[in-house]
Image 1 (cartoon, protein in one colour):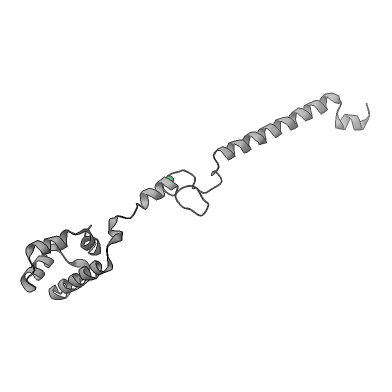
Image 2 (cartoon, helix red, strand yellow; image 1 turned 30 degrees about the horizontal axis):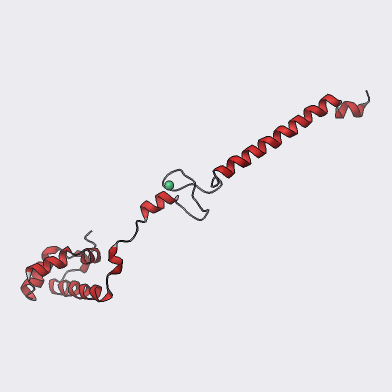
Length: 140
Ligand SMILES: [Zn+2]
């Protein structure tokens, strides 16, 4: 047996080498299949749970994102004129009570609108209870 055949092995070693190659091939096929199966696994993980995000530029997985960004409510369809008139009322109450609009309370509205502007108590309640006004005043 010469040095070359010793280095490169006989037939038996070739078989082993072939088997090794086949194995690595099978293994890489296997891991490829596996990564195709859970396709996002090179993406970063969600900041809320440990799922991989759907796209690399996302910070949260779809279900966490959905929870954090609920669909907008019906208020979206509020006509601008309604918002304008609520704004005017809030401004009126704010100026008359000397309060910052963010600090206004339901009592401020009742007091100012009923006593100063002769609003009906019911309509003041309507304003206070409206989801639009409440969201504008950050009461909810
Ligand atoms: Zn998540």
